[in-house]
Image (cartoon, rainbow, N blue to C red):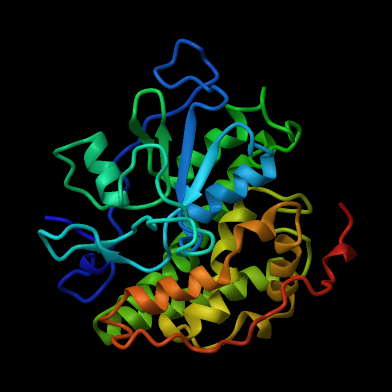
Length: 325
């Protein structure tokens, strides 16, 4: 049975995310089943999806545009097969159909679901992005964003333009791991736990934890430029992809309306700072983001109406340079 995130709510009414299933790793070791090679791999993303966007952010930050190709699906979920009622990520019929999205030129499939089934005919999990695809073996290497960004950080350094950029430096790894854990639980996944809750109690628990985590970030960022110090790290990329979507989508769609990110002086300036970092703005397509969330979850927004939003200018000046590197 084809599944999506909308089926991941338990009897208690709480949202429980299913783990990713393809977890192979690309390695600098040439004897690896998946060796790091220029031109061999393709990253399938959705500009709407925060998990996929963190991978695209790494591709841009590390300067891997000429090493790993990438393409985006359409933002709004559509029927993936005529034989059942599953809705998910689909490719446009032409590059003119949806600006920013492209047909699948590698395998000629019409949906991410078809891509998974091409790689594994008996696959029964979710059809998610990102998908890191091996063009040579014609299979999914990995669909877990946290694995993909770690591989991009180190395994392609021989080919990366920004080889000296290390977003997971050894001396900060314990702190990054610690921050990742509470940011994921309270914020990255927390907004989904708010939005997909089907009962009041799990929503109340999730929204309380969300704003406790945001308040914690605000306090940390009052003393330093980035979340783990005064250097950009993996933890910043993981936090950013949720913050950039917050005021335009999560406040309304996921009922995260206690406080806007714009009402947090440090978090808002921090979000603008990350957005203005080399390559990051190209990973943000707010039109895709809004079309996806407001148009793909009929149980939350049955008429698919997209709110006008505030059209925040993330390229406006910020104050984060006040912190010494």
